Amino acid sequence: MVEIKTDTSIEAMRVAGRVVADALAAARQAASVGVSLRELDRAARTVLDEAGAGSPFLGYRPEWAPVPFPAVLCVSINDAVVHGIPGDHRLRDGDLVSVDCGAVLDGWVGDAAVSFTVGRAKPEDVRLIDTAEEALAAGIAAAVVGNRIGDIAHAVGRVCRAAGYGIPEGLGGHGVGRSMHEDPGVPNEGRPGRGMPLRHGMVLAIEPMVIAGGRDDTYTARDGWTVRTADGSRAAHAEHTVAVTDDGPRILTAS
Image (cartoon, rainbow, N blue to C red; front, side, top):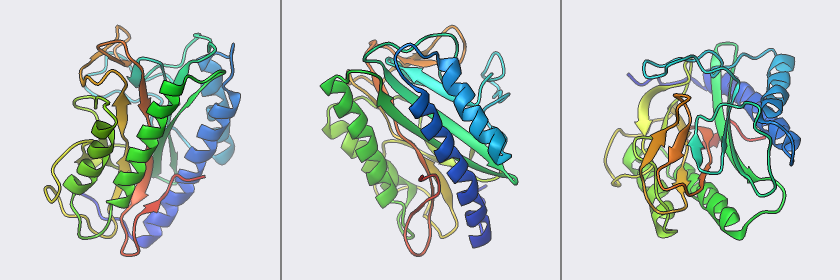
């Protein structure tokens, strides 16, 4: 069931969203050659703690997961698409880093992700990240009253495919509210004019993911969480929590 949020609830989600934006900014600022992924998680955790926010990631264990997620960030490096566990790996020059973060404040959730490079950026990585961001912008622009979920999916997928990139199968966006994952699902590819109509008060996490090699298939690593590209090529991820309103889409996780 899709929960329609009141304007007051959307304002409360915007407060949680600002915490997410600040945590992502702190993680990005901490990221440099030689820094461990655990240190990025620590930087984000400090932001959450100072804001009095909790983490919807920490301890999260869906039915398919072998263990609860042990961190407040997902940090996915190079060929990892999503759900990377931040451990003792130290960043190297040229790494492509995707960081996903959530926050819970006063019972409301914000969820967002950003990708960036560390050290000397490769032009192909910059293009991959730019495409993920462009696809996110296209998806957000389609999140208007009167459109349908398929219009968002089509807008995202069209950008990704035009660039020649793969779109990971089975991964996409979702509703957000009191829980991190709510109805409806928001695919990263689809047919326009199909799916659930968009109404004022729907809040969605729109999150394009792109695979440089052009294939869509992935696999889950031995840790039971990290999703990696099957061809070993690099991936990028971008995400915002977005409210559908009568005045147009409103990004709740912007800085």
